[in-house]
Image 1 (spheres, helix red, strand yellow):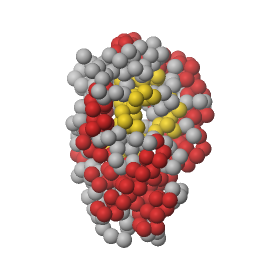
Image 2 (cartoon, one colour):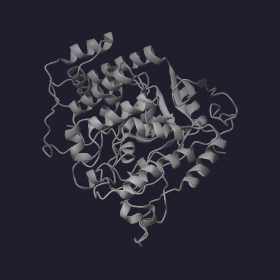
Image 3 (cartoon, helix red, strand yellow):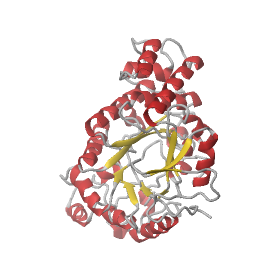
Image 4 (cartoon, helix red, strand yellow):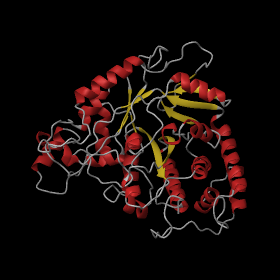
Length: 445
């Protein structure tokens, strides 16, 4: 199990035992052979023939991953000028790893106490995004709670209003202080000034088709017509159902997550993929997750980047209920990045999350196989609400200085990595240039 889990608290079918040796797995990784799950387990644990992390072996894994990174993408470290515009914190899914959501009942007009959450109308989203576009962002990313009044579009609302089912997590907007509109309205609102709209996780897509016989392809096709450009592969957590049954039993299962991602790719939308690790899962679960992402990429070719997200445990139900006593260790973080690079031989870009790791550790991950350093993130609520301490904004100047300080080349990129420009850290003024209104002026004065 992860170092974060008290021994004996949970029993899983999948256990991190193999008949492979660390030495054989490392040799395959160095030679660029496609790794098996057993290989991945040996590398991510630094060998199942001993307890704990072997530091010498760990450095061998990190070295192999960094070498692979250099072969695949060179010495560039990329980042995107972006904004997070989360529409609502209202959610009653009850995931035990999350403190972003607020119980949706608290948002109803009949609820009189303060709950600290928020819901934005489409007009508010448009104003926020339009302002950020003027300041130079390339991308708006939007990941939100599953508000009961949110529907795909008015046709979806009509179906839900006419239904007599009580299991659809739907209430009409009139019952809430703020009407979030529909998903299509929110996407159209954020599709302003040529910005790239990155939104609608598989979980949100499920919410956008509840109570209908619509396929995920139909849902993503309507969202694409509304202005959606790409889909974040979050809500993946761990793509092993025995783990999901513990940490997010009310969420879609692994198969449905994969179905939604394939559908997004089928209608021409790029996607990303994530893993959220360091809670109740063990090393076998992590590698099984990587296998499912790799197989998905074999089928679709649509994944532009893989994002390991280290679990932030403070102020989450998993921690409060004693299911975990911490998050992943530094060794586990470094090995997660490295094995992601070595195992995902069909995904070019591995991201280091400075929001999760902080600056110094985030930069360290760039020597463990990662090549992308996230985005500027003009607003970030999810990690902050879970107890994260690493801030909500990163300037282009900071990126240029930090990346060049470790001997790598800072590169501003588009969401799909197709458009890039090298940033000169010696320039007097450094700001974004790829966004539709970007002219090199810093995002924040």
